[in-house]
Amino acid sequence: LNSQEKIALTGIKPSGKPHIGNYLGMIQPALALADSYRAYYFIADYHALTTYKDRAILQRHIYEVAATWLALGLDPKQVVFFRQSDIPEVFELAWVLACWAPKGLLNRAHAYKAAVQANLESDRELDDGIHAGLYNYPLLMAADILLFGTHVVPVGQDQKQHIEIARDIASAFNHRHGKILSVPEALIGDETNVVPGIDGRKMSKTYQNTIPVFDEPAAIRKQVMRIVTDAKSPREPKDPDRCNVFAIYRHFADQTAVERRLRDYRNGGLAYSDIKQELAQILEDRFAPQRSIYESLLADRTAIDLVLAQGAVQARSLAKPLMAKVRRAIGIDK
Ligand code: TRP
Image (tube, rainbow, N blue to C red):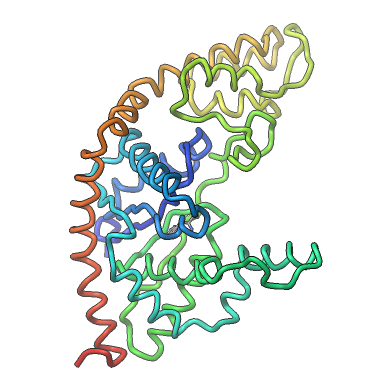
């Protein structure tokens, strides 16, 4: 197969406002990948149920994430964009895979282990407060991936183990039944695209150090102005490689501006407040058109519903024949 025929699939957990770290680390690379693969990108809404128990919050997150990807350039003619919950075969396959997955494989999953660890450290029982949804999360994810004959899965480093679990289960199944499931490869994002948050740690919702892509310009500017720097005066030479402002700036400014600013850093003569103002302006200009698309998509959700409904039809046309093969292989069907 050349890559044009290979399938790239990834799941997007609906979890609130995207920030520029998500954009650079995940959204932009996934959209670029769609030029060279058959891309299937879906909203992992049932995975989000492990986290969100409030119906209004889950609904809002689902539409926000759909609007985000569409506004940032996902072209539904190029990418099959759908909701996991629209594909019943996912849940059917998840059960089949459960019967092929050693329980120990799930015991070793990072998220489950971390929850157990937290319990043990607080003198609670091992599985206290842990529901089977969290425990089975990797199984549902394996079903997402294997149902579509996926070749590559673009994900962050934190998802690597999940892909390995899917590979293990697929291999065990194939070993018994012949090559029915394709064994996927993880395509791990380039760490050079990781940007620091405003406090210098990795940009992450958990740290509350993000610059959201679609916030009002004034709110974005406020965040940019708060980016932590050292206390050097404008005159002093500075190290751009150790500056949180520059680490973000270099991804968004054009090449000549980046080179000019690099000289300012090294030779002295750069005020942090200046480059911050410039960065805020660049972000505002860059995302203003997308922000208005984002807002209109959310104001009238029918356009989103239509895209996702069409995506579901396309995705199911791939899923159904594979599920039929699996049913025959295991002896459910004649
Ligand atoms: N677990 C992924 C995350 O938290 C989301 C996800 C669900 C996913 N199903 C997937 C990613 C299938 C890749 C493939 O980001």
